[in-house]
Amino acid sequence: MDLIKHLYYHSIILSCLLLVPTHVHSSKLPHNKHATWNVVDFGAQGDGKHLDTKAIQTAIDTCTIKGGTVFIPAGTYLSGTLFLKSNVTLHIAESALLLGSKDLDDYPKIRPQFSSYNDLFHTQSLIYAENLENIAITGKGVIDGQGNVFRVTTKKRPDRYKDRPFIIWFVTCKNVFVENITLKNSAAWIQHYLACEDVIIRGIKVYNHCNQNNDMIDIDGCKNVIISDCIGDTDDDALTIKSTSGRLSENITVTNCVLSSHCNAIKLGTESHGGFKNIVIENCIVKPSRVEETIFGYSKGIGGIVLTVVDGGILDGVQISNIRLDGPKTPIFMRLGNRGRVYREDMEKPPIGSFRNVILSNIIATQADSFGCSITGLPGHALENITLNNVHIEYKGGGKLRSALNVVPENAENYPESTMFGQLPSYGFFIRHVKGVTLNNLYLSFEQPDYRPAIICDDVAGLDIIGLRADGTKEGHALIKLNNSQDVLISQARLDSPIRLFLTIEGAGSRAISLIGNDLRYAENFYQISEYVDKNEVQMVGNLYSK
Image 1 (cartoon, helix red, strand yellow):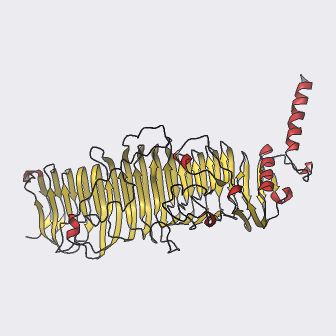
Image 2: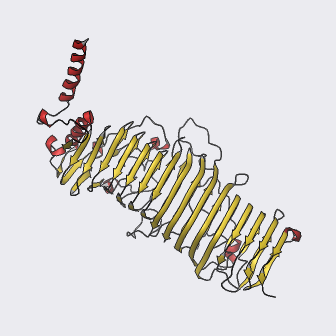
Image 3: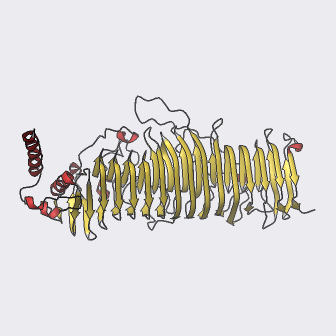
């Protein structure tokens, strides 16, 4: 028995030694997880001219035997795809640059075992990991994908997503740690974490303005994720949480980040097959990009906070708080739609998903455009339990009287973008097909006079508007418009300037409407109802208004 054990261990040691390059002396083999493997010792030249892929990969392969750190020192290291291994930390020194090759042949095509919508177009990455454990990328160095050389020349090309490598692509990995590195110039998304668990991303910097689909980060069907202290400036979406498979993105926290995007700064969607559950985002600043030229979107961004479910799936338990938004055209956009995209060809179109239990608190937004914010479901498929608490939005204004008559199509199958309805008939919020809405301490203002209502609610049940302060005009429409809405409480509203009319109530479905304790002394008229509304459905208690 002892002889068998001796031969077994001898074979393991021999196989490990065979993986070490001949120019590395066996005395340099690590004996614990703290060992460091310098890529220069494996033949990396670090001159930015010679391809160092093989040398770096050999260091990674050697390190995975007993664990430790692969060290990239000062220099410029040109590389194609690197396959990370379990129990390996890739550490890039502060003065080191890992440079993605400009030759597409240096990026082998990969098809992950885990199936998702991405299988249709993404196949390459500079750093790839699948089914691994205990992997990390650290250091204050830079990874530059040189993604501009793979740039798409037209948006209409049917295969425009292909042949554009990510920088980081991790699939079904556990215990992932990424810290302090700077990521630049990806040919597509700069980093994609698909179906991973126990992920920490901390203190990274991202700059991505060289190609289409230049997202900052994509968390996709992952579980137990912490993102903190990051700075990103991207042409496409910044903080992006997706679900491109049947797997939920859940138990995710994001805090203390500074984000800039030409598209959407904080986004759940666009893909939502599995959905989103238990997500907390707090203490973040969204500011205009330092880059004015855009590939997609607008220089100051399209959307600030964007929550969408359009491919089935659920959205449940999302809290977003302490956010400063400066510049995006539409600060807040929530959408339950029915695009019904599939992620496998043999799938049937998924049913309409669900969207509930969302709280947005302590939001300040400035430079918002005249599109307006929207919170919308579909007929028979309402959003549920939506709360906005202490939200202050400053709009540019300028909406005309006729704009209040704009018809908002359902657009059930459209791509969920916050500008999808055009200019809304309300300058502040358009809310439709929702059950359970609380607007608490909502402050809406505009720079130029806007003659549209501040808030329109259509097919809304269980609506509380408490502590509203909103700009209006003496020549414009009512400040609030209700249509086919029921169980409504409007309380503690306060007007800071004269308006013609406070409230309009329309639709035979409007009932059980209470107005309690509002200071409406600047309103020439309190409310008016259409002929289809029973006046007994409107109750008033303790309101102040001009005689």
